[in-house]
Amino acid sequence: MESKLGFFAAGILFVYALISLLYFLKGKASQEFVYGPTPSVKHVCTSGYTFSYHLAAPICQKTLGHPHSYWTFQLVLSLTLAIVVAFVSWRRSRAALIVLSFITGLTVQGAAGFPFIALAAWLLIRAFRLQKYGDPTFKGSNAVARERGRNRQPRGKAAAPEIGKAAPAPSKRYTPKKKPRR
Image 1 (tube, rainbow, N blue to C red):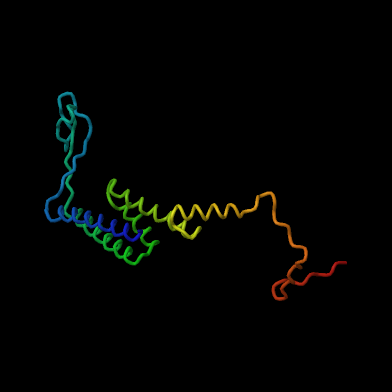
Image 2 (image 1 turned 60 degrees about the vertical axis):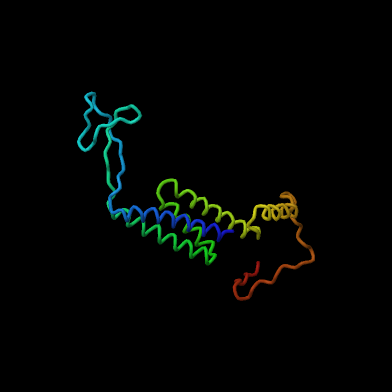
């Protein structure tokens, strides 16, 4: 199931790379609108901003363009991450998939990175359960924890030391000789 989710995450990254490829092939710089200070009473904005209405309120907005190199970097990064995530999923390397999906979640813009961070957290919890209880599922780890709880002794009652057992002899190599008492 973990490798299937890894391949699904790689597919999402390939779609993200395809979207970046479309903007890259357009050859145009994309535009982003940034809202600035409020206009004056005479509808005058500071230099670089244009006057317009947004939801019937006067605003000053500025158009910023993303250069072509912006989409080049995004295309190369998303395509590289998609290939590496697919390879790691194919190799079934849980630790590498956790690290890569967390890094991918941080590098992908906006809310699109949240599923990758959630995947990394889910894989991390499964790895913890597998190491501690021997079963990555919630049902299996819960059963093992209950069984361990039944076998545990109460805190106040420590096991009594066995009387017939002698203490081990001190090591001649590492234990310094004791001086005789006077």
